[in-house]
Image (cartoon, rainbow, N blue to C red; front, side, top):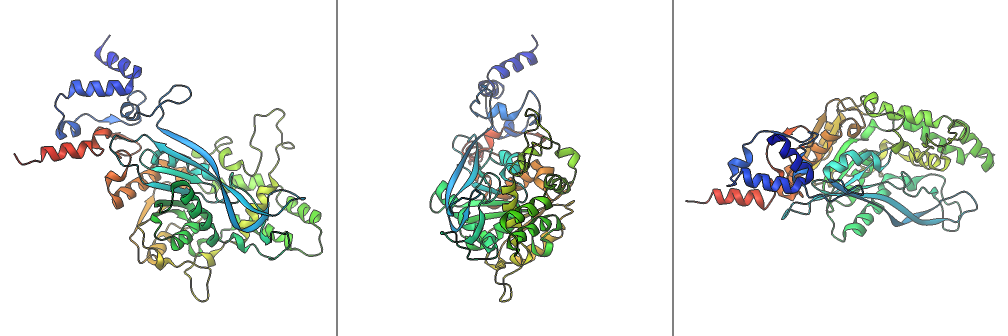
Length: 460
């Protein structure tokens, strides 16, 4: 057997043991020069993957090495408003659930726990849209993705804020869905998960960006950095695709119609909602043929429609729509517009006090975004005058830039964190998420590489 075949056989048998022994045999004296000066190794090579070489990542159910572990859960939230969670007869409640997923990668010996990074999605999606990016960032940080109230697997209250605890109508508008109220459950969720005094980096796209700016104003000392990814901003929102959905929420305020007639009208107008939603998704990416098909869309379509294509006797008449979820989406969409995104003034009291934000900020934008102009990033930058604001354009990416270019977005997030807080805040060293690299990730991680560097720099 050739030397190369023997090495590969040893590696496949025990990647971590092989990596350690081989390096000790090949580098009897570890120096900074030896660490930095060797042939490139591919991070994506089928057999020689650095993730398998140097990460003690545990085993999954099939006894295969894994890089990132995930845990899903639901957190109970007591809201300031009441709603109902099922069709009549139902009891008003303000007890809801926020669905979340935590991702955490292997931590190098002696390294930091890693900064906490919170991901919030946009419309009409859910936390699963962030998974490709979140799993990469989780190699270096502690990551949590949540579904906003009313979307994904979180509770979906109807009549939210329209009724009191006794079911009495108290409002004729969905003001409870204003973005300024979302920070309440986000703040309390993060405290419940990580404890009082929690600090975190907040990443959000689209609708989530509208919530993020309100959150950062209210909890300026809690958010250590904000990263806005193609956020809705200023007069770039609302967009017609979502306005058409939000407009249908007005049906329930029509007079002279009973509830059954109102529901019939709503379902008639939204009968082709699955087609509409699919086209919206494909409009929001730069190259839909590359990222979307019947199956890859399921993770973000599932709250609104049946996506079980392989079930017995599946056909258009038995693969229906989730009318409840569509109603809640329409209710949320009916309230959201540019006044909540413009600066707050005496004439615009529901706007954002951008001057209150002092945390480091990065604005990531797909240059092929055909829903919100990429030049909006500079307008936002001008408004955040008390913060250090970077802008990061992404080539070949549309509005859902994290779907088009997940590794570039993940690299932008991780690089921004390093640029603001230093390399040693991460769980392990960062050398990119795609392509060829040089070096051993373990040896860059504190206290390994910096100790070696300090020893070699001692006066002789």
